[in-house]
Length: 124
Image 1: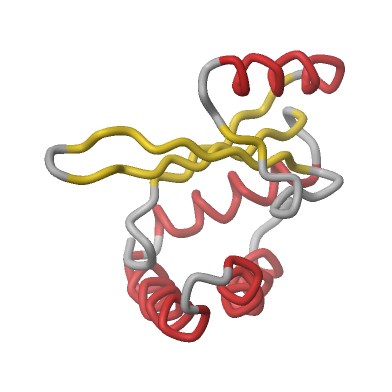
Image 2: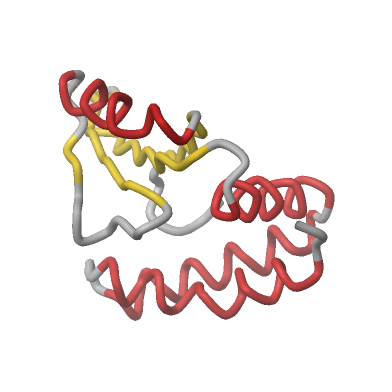
């Protein structure tokens, strides 16, 4: 969907199992990124060989049915039902990549308004 060519996966686990799942991800080669994490979501990344390059995978670990989980799933579902929103999001992400020049915090900040506007339209 435009952007950086990264596969993003959200994993919702029972609240009491977040720490255990964090440890499992780390044991399986995922790098925990504290700076990119929030109080509601832990962030991990791993690179996998893909033909002549690497495919980066991001895992967003959050409590199942938490506010964060609902927002991520609702945002995904909104895009699945609205191809025109996907096209707009692709443009936002491409601009974010150009503006950020590899700085993840700048990239996320650039997308934030678009995401928040979508979340205001959906029932959580």
